[in-house]
Amino acid sequence: MTHTESTSPQGWAQTGRELLNPNVVTMLFLGFSAGIPLLLIFSSLSLWLREAGVERDAVTFFSWAALGYSFKFVWAPLIDRLPVPFLTRWLGRRRAWMLVAQVSIAAAIILMAITDPSSDPNSLTHMALAAVMLGFSAATQDIVIDAFRIESAPPRLQALMSSTYIAGYRIGMVVSGAGALYLAALFGSEAGDYSYLAWRNTYIAMSATMLVGLLTTLLVKEPVTKRLAEHAYTPSDHLRLLGVFLITAAAFATSFFLSGGPFDALKAALGGGSLMHFLIEIVHFALAVGIAACTVWLSVRLGAINRTMARETWVEPVQDFFERYGLKTALLLLALIGLYRISDIVLGVISNVFYQDLGFTKPQIATAVKTFGVFVSIAGGVLGGLLATRHGVMRILMLGAIIVAATNLVFVALAQVGANLPLLYAAVSADNLAGGLASAAFVAFLSSLTNVSFTAVQYAIFSSLMTLLPKLLGGYSGSIVDGIGYPGFFIFTSLLGVPIIGLVWLAGKRLAIAETSSSK
Image (tube, helix red, strand yellow):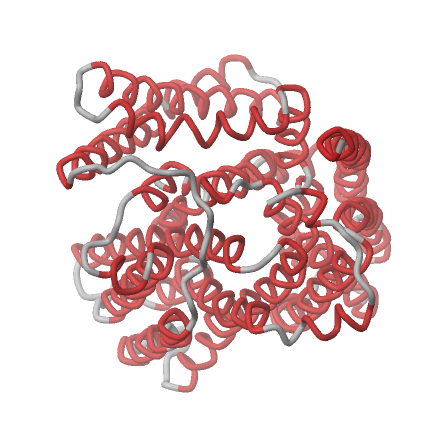
């Protein structure tokens, strides 16, 4: 996939017709399937556990089950490399893994459904294991759907496919969020009047919604790609690769969590503000990654894995990216990927707390943010896809960077005025419209950077990097608010977006130079 193809402008008539392209429509259904699991781990599960009488600190631990979304790049190489016995021959490489992930998601949701967290202490362990299975399976589905999307259609359709995928994803989140809460209430479970059967039936109904993704996977065609010639490997080579991955994953997780205490002590000893703690967390994460990399290196040196296979799996996808763009441009692109969403993600972490602190009621917040805001976000995503297809991805990427930074200032006005409902809807509208538009253009931009020979790995790295730094900094948003207040915090998030505008301009300039050079 080349950047020139992905950003070539099209006419409005052609753009409108391509909204009905089967590949574009397919992503609506696959996006829905991808949007179902997340809130079944977060908000919906949290309310279930609280109604069941589980302590608040135990409830928050369940959010760790979604860590797979942030670290999916670790096992994405396996998705690119390993065949699924029997299924790969029948369905093809992408659809086989997609089917496995979707069946695993449905099974994990059912395992959660048949577990009553109020029955005995062991039930919480069972629920946690099922939630981890759900998070891992959902992240795997994301890896495969991203690769399928990039490989199944030409670059000119990627912006529209990104927008319909985001729309489907948001609809799936509405179903598993507000829809699940509605069903639980309808079946007879309320705060102070807990009913396990109500939540069981709700989660069984949620597992049934995965049929949308399953049927789509069975009905669509496997994408045809021109991949680099691959070596023939034995089943033993594949099993050894899987074994090394499991050992590496264990080394990463163990080192990250065991070193948490010393790093917390270091933060306490050094003191400093949120920025210092943020930098320490980056070092903490880098240490765990380094230990995982050393584990892979040692496994190769000891002959635990085929050296050629290890190189093709972990080294060549990264090497390819730097070779295609050159060191300076590649580093610039990685900086843009890691920082583009920082303004809206850091704000989003504390937005609901901000609404509560202003005095808005929970129903007002739910209606404005969880319902109205979602549909505005869908509209923004579709608009972003249409504009990117019509005017080119880089122009809309720049527009998204500008309006995301600018719309954060609406929250400054809301913080000054207080619990003003019309202004709340104005802030939610501006935030979600800008975020949806920027996200659609950004996903199309990331797609244009991938090589179809390493689609799953490269896109998983990009999408993980996209949220990693913003989420780490977002964890300190509460401390920042305590220090400078809400108005100062929202101005700070807007200022975070200013350098991004410069990065988009520089990236567009360097990519244009590269395209000009390659066309000569």
